[in-house]
Image (cartoon, rainbow over all chains, first blue to last red; front, side):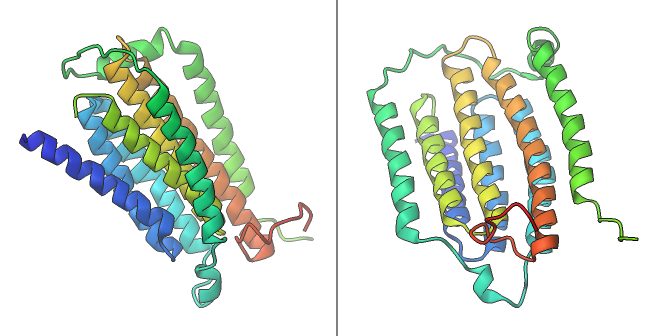
Length: 167
Length: 101
């Protein structure tokens, strides 16, 4: 086996393992930190898929933005001394049943489908191609998304601000 | 490593774990983490198809839009969760069953 291949399977196992910790950890803060390693593992897999720009974007936005927000949310909404509330979960068997149901559907899809033959592609930088695609073919979705981000920004500030004291 | 299948299997596994997390956690932030796992697994599928099936890079552009929407969704959801915590002093979603406070 080649070195590259060993590394690929190591990254895949690492990603799946930390995703498992996110799902099964008793304390929510452990889930949050395991999520960090899941995102990093996904960035590594993107590199294997030849998506260099997306790998960097994944690290900047997910690890640098979304994960910090989630940690913020965990730390600000946790009653540190109330251990019962910290480890409260829904019924495990019910959840495993739901997960198995989804897994069954996806397995059927993966096995029964006839996947198209692949197009061989060399590793090439994708940033330029993505920039051109966004500003030509995907211009309208791009504009809509920028508008949506503006709305989300204003909405988040409006929702999270401290209420004025009643006069 | 040079075929579509390993990536699809990784994506499917993480998707399942994400759905499991959404059902299993009572904490609203934990449910948000499950949603993030689901979105990531969808992203890896898009990028794998962009590499192995599509001739262009359409899958990668769609993945960028998914990442943008995930960021917006997280910001809004956390604002809502903080607001709920401020008024109800809990983030347990099984206890939040009314819209008035």
